[in-house]
Image 1 (cartoon, rainbow, N blue to C red):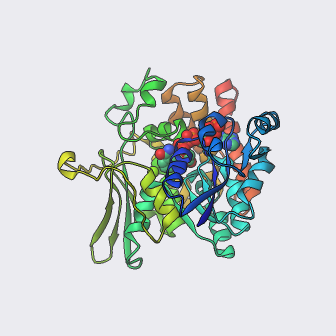
Image 2 (cartoon, helix red, strand yellow):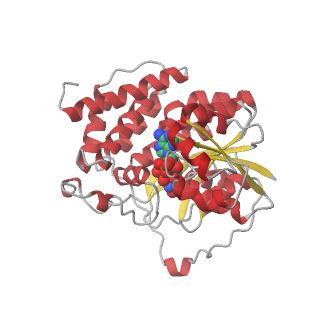
Image 3 (tube, helix red, strand yellow):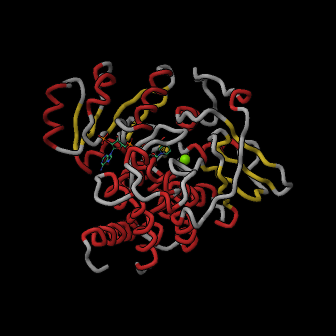
Length: 383
Ligand code: NDP
Ligand code: MG
């Protein structure tokens, strides 16, 4: 029996993790979880379980929900998040938070010797050097939930030497068939209409700008300790080949599956074993064709920025990530147009000045620098 904590339990990955856990009551038990405010999204789970530690953002919510759910203990805020991430009885922490807010609890969980199942890629983008050093020092395991990285782990499971390159696949997101000049006036609901995956809002927008793939390239660098010139991205519209590894002898191993995040979530929890998962089988005859195309770096400038940022291994990836989070948040709140996201973030990336990144505080400062640049730009101030 594995005791599991889910940070971000009310989100897209969090709810699918609850589904996986519920399917295997003999293997997994949830001992704690967190949401920001949407307790309603997990109320069925709370009603059918007892004895959980539940973190919410506000102390007033914690007090109110303690009355509604007397069988659970409610905590709140950043301290509460750290408390849940380091629960004594927890074996594995699933981090399904969105954004850099996931970084501190991840580090706290690692220091408390918890294994990590990580969906929260922003943590590795902003502080990969610090997180991977902590993983090594504490002798814990960090398994990716991101489908591309889970695919690579699976491709490397029989042989993990003599790697020539990692090939990450990209669907291209909601606007993959539009030129940049056709993006003026696209709406929020157009942008949230991903062709293959149903995901949270932030990652869906990141997919449309391909910043998501840029974040994943940096994530791959830290997870697999690969130089950036050995990490390639290709467009694959069907999202069936989740990623590939080419070896020195030119053999290529790929991992395939229907686009359903419960597969990589479950693998992150069951690794190195595989458990049954009652989903429809992949029907390649129905899919008919798998297509691959080069990525256009001019069309998707943030993918280019991410490669440039990652290669330097200083604080610029954290700053770029912070700028992107702020710009996406502004777009989601209707403050800027879709085309402004990559225009502003690329401009921020070129304009900021950078320094070394050695500590969590360095990553926090870089994140704040990126956010401040975008906030000022939106307010029309000089940046
Ligand atoms: P969602 O937006 O659906 O869920 C985010 C979760 O984090 C929610 O539980 C939310 O709580 C909580 N949360 C948000 N902000 C805060 C905060 N400031 N403090 C505390 N909790 C917070 O995101 P996704 O599930 O889509 O994505 C989660 C992570 O997984 C991201 O890093 C994403 O890139 C990655 N990922 C997602 C995939 C997907 O299919 N969705 C695929 C691969 C990776 P509340 O609901 O109460 O607001
Ligand atoms: Mg992915």
